[in-house]
Length: 147
Image (cartoon, rainbow, N blue to C red):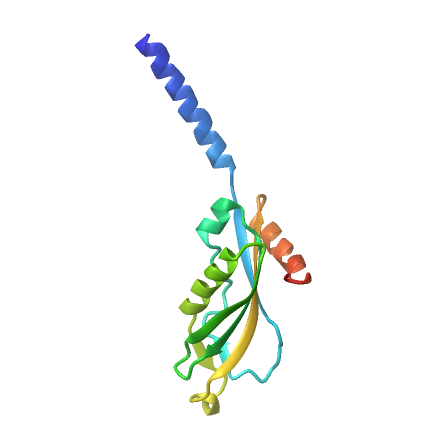
């Protein structure tokens, strides 16, 4: 009896391990300036794509958020506002958290003590095949209206 229960548990654990291992999720976040211009005063210090929030990935949430904020004279995002967040408000919450982590540097030495108002869009995309698939999905999504 003990042997059959133990065998059943081992089979269950192995089958669930294989199932969990096959559930790969590849996330991508694209950042787009709403009004692109070459005369920006500030630029992101680290221009890598932000990391996809694990909570959103676990829930399978994709969508976009348009964010408005000021870049202070010290290079930090302040007065962050969610303009749009589709399909859920949680995208705006996670977008705000991402913005708060960014450091901004002046594009030239003459811009050091000037603040700037910015509006950006963050697109959150998920793919189940590869990182490239999620990046391509995000590039297509950025062409759609957010909201």
